[in-house]
Image 1 (cartoon, rainbow, N blue to C red):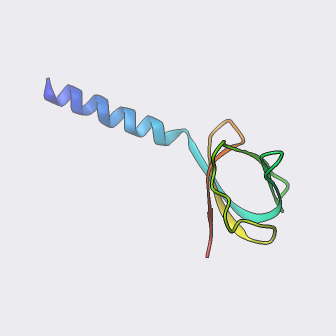
Image 2 (image 1 turned 180 degrees about the vertical axis):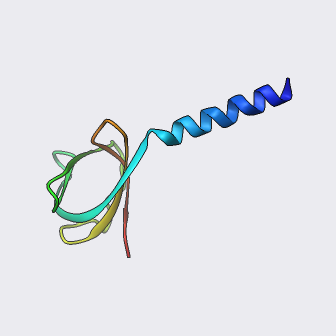
Length: 80
């Protein structure tokens, strides 16, 4: 029984990460009022509520983490 429970938890963990995406790019525009960020490649992402944007501005290279199938940015990090 313990093996079945462990397998179920491992499967759930793999599924949750299987549906996450990430992209690296240079910020073209950041509009906190509209809750959007546009990369120089033309991709536009909607910012999740409460997302930390300190230091993120046009020209910075960022890594955006999002749910596959959506354009909602769940996390943004500046790439050094």
